[in-house]
Image (cartoon, rainbow, N blue to C red; front, side, top):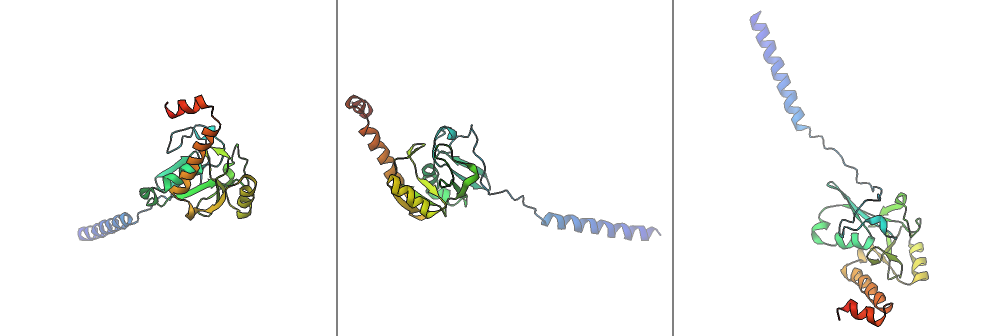
Amino acid sequence: MNNLYRTGGQALLAMLLAFGLAACGDKQEVQQSLDPVAFHESDECHVCGMIIADFPGPKGQAVDKAGVKKFCSTAEMLGWYLQPENKLLDAKLYVHDMGKSEWAHPSDEHLIDARTAWYVAGTPLKGAMGVSLASFADEQQAQQLAAEHGGRVLRFEEIDHAVLQQGADMQHHDMHEHMSETEHNDHAGH
């Protein structure tokens, strides 16, 4: 009888050990949602640290396994993304659809995939950091904005540092056009 208990005990121990080892092999990964999230009044831009809600125009966000990075404008997000190390993150990128949002306060209900969006560059419409890239889900709405305000319609793949720099140069040029000579000299450090 003692031998029976010992054999049964060894079998039970072997089964528990087998189940324990099998459980170690089942790495249950917690799946983090890569869906867009709402912007909040206190959110700061990942690049410049400015309060995102203080500015009009479309915003952007990058969502990856590590979390969410929010940006005060589409241009800030795209400038961040174009850095080679950030392309490796395999982040989902989102921007506001300005065909369904008001410029002053874009709706977080209308965040779209940045890689499939249409962008209008070169408009006088202001956002954070000056001139903004207006983002749209629909090409015709992007074309309409470009016709009304000037600018050109681009796809995600067409946006590079040169396009972003043109927007910055345009902002700088517009600022100088509207300055008095004294303000211009003060700005230039004279």
